[in-house]
Image (tube, rainbow, N blue to C red; front, side):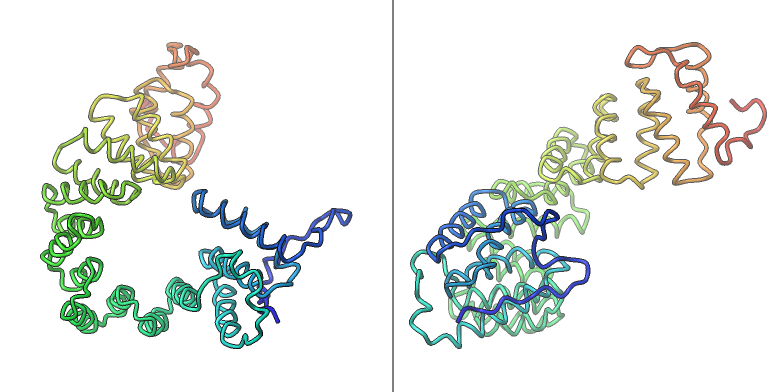
Length: 401
């Protein structure tokens, strides 16, 4: 008896792939051992490739191949567990993941037949505790923090208990857990960090840092944010740097470091921080915008122009970023981009008016000035006329431009 495959209850999503061509070759029949090999390849890909949405979608092809032919208890359990790990990160599938994990837990308790151990050593079969922890993680991700807290307490996962207690406002419970673990000599740096989040005492973060012998990046990160909230920029910079030295894949910490460096006037450090931030998260519009602002201060207008272009790609509806791009485009002679920016601002701000910018573009047309690509400004004549006929621009006082 294999675990039940819970169906997806959603009107907008298909439970599995449906081919538009009815003659498409169906999945060939596989033996249990062959299914185990397919799942092994799936696990290998998940562990060797970056964990992102595309990676999980590729893994789902392997998982669906196995789930379409339920044969072996271990194979089916591993496939369902892997699918739950993938689906809990997507809002429309998180409910199915939660119900499936409940079903897996019941299946573990109800399985008495010796055949459930077939191929047990061929696959990474999750323990009942791993399934319950995954279930609690799903509950936490959908906002059922109190229910997740109950599961974590049953599993004696004290770090998660402290974090959930802090999230639901049970600060007394957090202190109780940390104090109890300290008395038993079983406290961890993460527990002390959670205590610091509740008490707002930086000494808890420092104790966590010393307890970890300089290996707890969370302690320095939390200490950095503590100083950042108090606008103590010089103090937060070394804390962020220590945290990033341990784990450099923290785009939000890089962004915070860049902002702090901006405040103290260290432009070189700010540029480095924002560059690392956007290399990790290419859609971080605020980081692109701040990076462009620093380039402007350093008179590196071409770099600023390119950074603003990336910023508007990430945040297409921010008229302020478009205005920054407009100004820089005119200054470096990117007339076509300037017109595009002006039109977009008019879409977002109907009453927008910048006489100086319009004057520069009109002068480029009348004088036949060349842009950065070497083209004459005359080629934007039609677009300029369209701009003047749009929105409130036609109400400009005579002789303004």
